[in-house]
Picture 1 (spheres, helix red, strand yellow):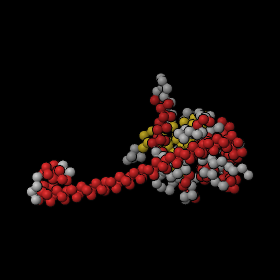
Picture 2 (cartoon, helix red, strand yellow; picture 1 turned 120 degrees about the vertical axis):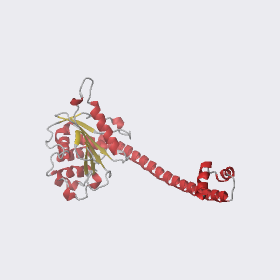
Picture 3 (cartoon, helix red, strand yellow; picture 1 turned 60 degrees about the vertical axis):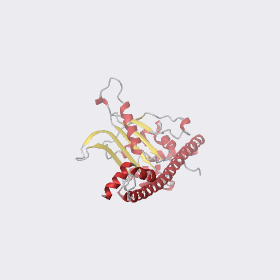
Picture 4 (cartoon, helix red, strand yellow; picture 1 turned 90 degrees about the vertical axis):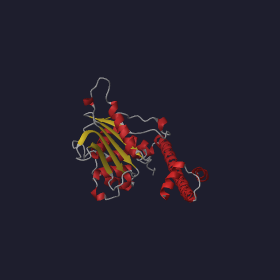
Length: 296
């Protein structure tokens, strides 16, 4: 039996959710489930704005294989999966949302023509310090909670939290996310039973897993993502070590400064000149004068 590719690798994710043949069944159903709390009226159709995948981007660690779509009423949806924690998700998502918002305003158009941008970030790591797996952010007044404008909406869905209080979660959205997270194939029938579009996504994954070219590109992409994560882990470990070393040096400096102050106080008590104390201790004249005031 052919080993299934992982839907959480962005290349596979985009093949499943960002293809023209899957937009009306897979992408549309997932987006409607993800936005059920903020878009009470389900979308009827989606137009994929970036269906193509640049094969040259497979080994580029910085490339972004997101899915961009437009709804029938002009709203834009950006769907992205992230496997590497760069500790900048909030700024990153806000930047891309603002970029999609700004790009709408062509020359001669008015601000009133700008349409809502919705960013859905699916994360394989923890980002928020609580047990919720789905977070939704808007621009609101901090005291009253009044919404300033509904034009920027950002979602974070954390796959690592799917096992927390699962009985309180929305079943259909959880089913989608469990599939994306690579749940055992033995559970597929159960997950797809009451989740429109999920069966088609599963069939697409099975087909991709048997395709030689898709598997080759998958391995290329997985290696690039692994190299990126290794670089991030190395940078983080270096940062921690440098922080510890800096702390040790600061401790030494603080200890040296305290000893110098004790020496300076003794010299002041014996009536020695400030210039001599500066030369011996390395303290400044102002520091020594301040110590002199303490003596008096």
